[in-house]
Length: 154
Ligand SMILES: [Zn+2]
Image (cartoon, helix red, strand yellow):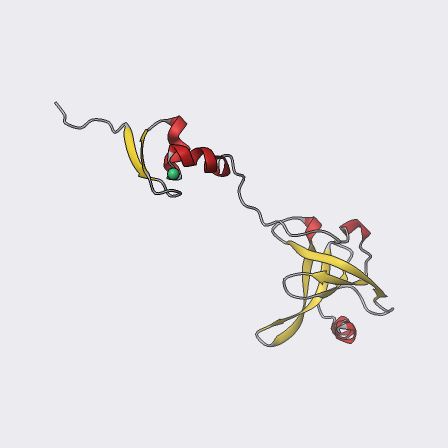
């Protein structure tokens, strides 16, 4: 004969009020046990923990210019990780100047509408300024674009 019996009850210390509570271990009490809440506090706080969707970082999109309204070669004030001024490349990207380890270089960040994880740029203001003739909206080997961005940085 075994002395071991299956554990059917558990005592918790409520993290909200500090009272001890004994629960039968079953599906109905699973959430209260998991979150250390007594019966009284479970009714008050329990709904906060149940069926909670995973936390997703959702920025404030108010005022953002939609990708379909962005014009190729146009200069936008944007909210992005690495710069605040970028030229739309016509393919979902904004080319701006980025400084890393003391070096400046052109870098593309993608419109929020292109989706996670790369869509991090939010154009907030159309400056009405277009790239002049002779400067392409491309990132690589484009010192003229870098100079254009420097000229329009304030
Ligand atoms: Zn409690």
